[in-house]
Length: 71
Image (cartoon, rainbow, N blue to C red; front, side, top):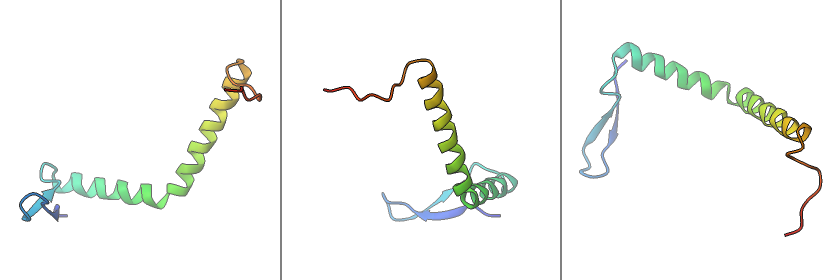
């Protein structure tokens, strides 16, 4: 796989993304990007679950309460 070219905003010429990566590294990064994109819904649910677990942990230790404080 070859690096992708993008236009350079400063001089309008092409610029290469991934010039410092080998073809194998570019392929692996592309596969990783595709995998993350395909599984983004699952990852969002995992992140939401972790946030809920953290909120519960805070609540159990008295760091987070159900009451709202008045400003």
